Amino acid sequence: MPTGRLTARRYGITKIVMPTPFESAQLNLQLFDLRREPVLREARAWFLSEFNPESFADLVAIASSSEHNAAFRMVLGYWDLAASLVTTGAIDGDAFRAANGEIFAAFSKIQPYLAELRAASGEPEFCKYMEIVIAADADADAILTRRREAIRAAAKARAR
Image (cartoon, rainbow, N blue to C red):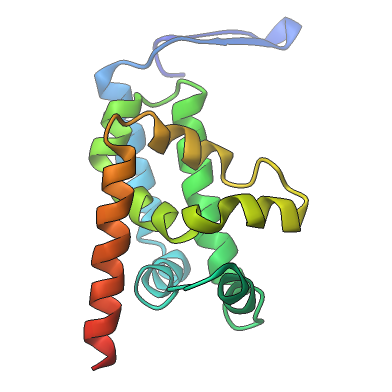
């Protein structure tokens, strides 16, 4: 069991304290290892390069297609799970954001449609942990805008 955690298993109580820098680094490296899993790697490649919705209707059409639904869910599920490690105190937020900049790119693709997505799906907490972790960065809006613009520019360049 990592240091910095006190568990009263007998009573089902867990108190999480801030991780050490070493623990944060270890968990960040483990998350990086998971990203190398072939199916997740393929899903991330599709999400980052080919998933470029221009509207909420576009997002729904792409994400609900049988061809892309699993990749859509896998990428967002992975990043929301990873972000939950920050919100629960298992990984330091600054260390996480420094090591996992891709989360900004992934979130930038759904952020303009997030309220509609949550309402339509009946899941008001969809990607909640991603949103919390990203919003904690003082430059979150600027970073999301830069990533969104860079991704759109790259997609247009590939289309030529």
